[in-house]
Image 1 (cartoon, rainbow, N blue to C red):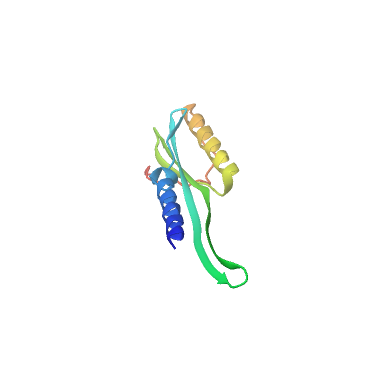
Image 2: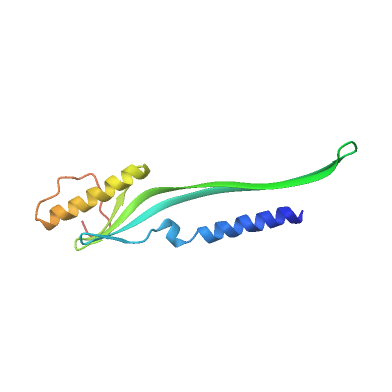
Length: 129
């Protein structure tokens, strides 16, 4: 039983170590006058189990184990620039995340050059627009 408690304590300790605010809110990235802050959804699960038994012909034994899995999914990018603060949702997957970053930087570069953006598919937040 001590083994299973030890496995459980180590597993929970690692989860606590990995989960912090930087896990869900990424480090700010500076790109052409824009500050981009990635937001991600973090999910995980784990299990711990043990058992022991005796059989007259084979003797006694015991065993235990732990396992787990997790994932990280980009969900949005906070864009901070001279126009204000915008939250840009990411449809799904890493490819979409990179597309969203490229699109946001492109819009900012076009705005800097005085060209109006033709994309109306993104929602703005916190900028009064």
